[in-house]
Amino acid sequence: MTSGISGTSRTSRATRSAAAFMVLAAGAAGCGGDTTGGAPRPGRTSSPAASASPTPPPGPPGALPRPGEVGRIPRPTDGLPPVISSIPTRRKVVFLTIDDGWEQDPGFITQVRDRRIPITAFVTRDAVEARGATDPTAQGGRFVGAGKWGYMRDLRDAGATVENHTLTHPNLITLGYGGQKAEICGTSALIRRHLGNRPTLFRPPFGNQNILTRRAAKACGIDALLLWTATVQPGGKIAYQVPDKKLRPGDVLLLHFRPDLSRDFRILVNKIKRRGFELGNLDAYLKAATR
Image (cartoon, rainbow, N blue to C red; front, side):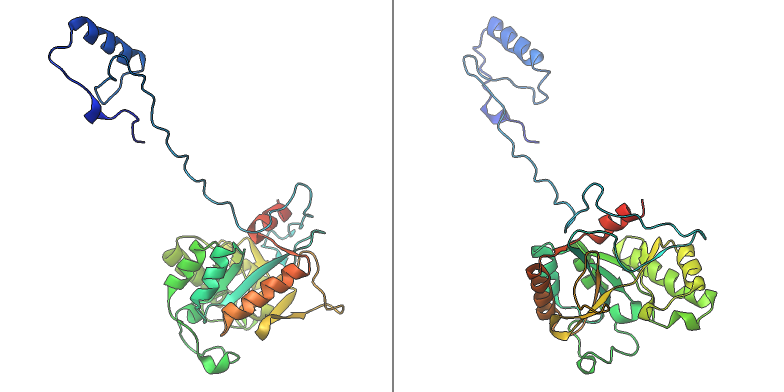
């Protein structure tokens, strides 16, 4: 903090009387001992310059749970991570998630940051690093900027949460315990290396999982497996998994990093809000539901 008393404005005149000097010295001592070693001129009232209050860091993006709002998700009796597909709440709030990591569109990050949109990304190594076979549904595999962990750091810094979706996007139920553990723990290690955080959520590719998946996830430090209740298609269209084809409180929506992500994301967010739903902070709601 900058002192409100400037050292360059002090007067050190040789002709100042000893009595005046003693008065000033006593005054300085009464103020707690100015470490700058100076004092204000006699006859002038000195007050510290007003310092601007630091801007508090913004809170987490998205709607946060109200007291008593969220129902409890029971802990499995086997002690393994629960498998969750929606949040138990009656509030009109839904949760956005996005998978893989191929399309690295800076416009998407801009929306997440500037509109403070809560979203959780479940990433695979092969998508983020542009390895292996590309997403066949994505316009022949032509992606913007694929191949950089820096994009995920920027997305994290914009307010998103980055979680685990395996290394290579396999159908996990075709693998044994060791293979599943390698996929999950390997991805957690990469995320920690590049982003500094240890993932606590895991999304199994295709939603396929078994008891070995949950055991492997627990061994890798995962708290819960998260599935979804609706998917988002090109053009921001919502593909519902319920007969009435409507959003419901607590729904978890699944997007993918695909071409036209910025446009489709804008359409989706505006559609959700027009229908009277808020976008919830998934981390806060999960903590409330699994307390």
